[in-house]
Length: 310
Image 1 (cartoon, rainbow, N blue to C red):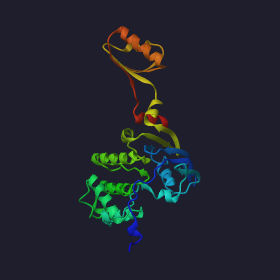
Image 2: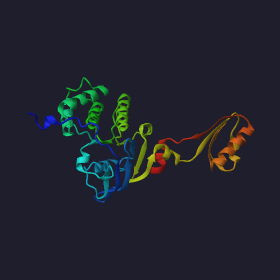
Image 3: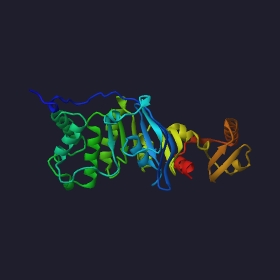
Image 4: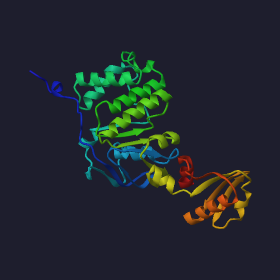
């Protein structure tokens, strides 16, 4: 005779889709924490969610997960209103650790896996695999409180990922991780997106977001100030070119159709008004002598972030 619990299997290959939030708003008294936020987390894409402290990222994520009531707005999953049953197939990692400090790592993860619909044997197999990947294979029998903060973060990540979730909502998942764990985490997230899982994660580490993400949502003062592919957002910045000559580049100050940002000896940083102005500058530089470099300068994500949140 089998029990209900023993018939549960690992919920692998759950149906994935796209998360859409439309017009999310939330007030706390007189404070407007989130104001008409609309964003999309496409299937199979890593979407970075960035903004300063108090921008509204955590509040937005909690509303998407149904942990916080919305004053206004809707959340869609696979093009229809999301349900509590849908959310139970999501992997969620809160910014504040939600682990029981006195409980052993494996015992706790098995319990959390069963809450997600896994059988105990399937949960143990998935836990073993993830502990190995995070270098914690020998710590499964330890109580959580005996682990360093970084290792506790690893366990929290495993809890969110182990049940093959249909979507991932991760609040500061890379906080406290060393470079090796960051790489392991990045590999895991890419494996999930490869099977179509939408991933939304918040982070203050802009260099990490720039390296990992397909898309970006920037929040400031409770509103979305920029959203789109990382390359698309970079393209919105000024069209700057770097010109490197053999001789002094001071003459570029007299060229029409461009703004000179900086000149330092043979190196000039300029903003042409258009492509024709850029080509005219290059032609004049060639006429004057050898040109060592003429290239578009792509602004880093940190610069785009400062511009859109100013």
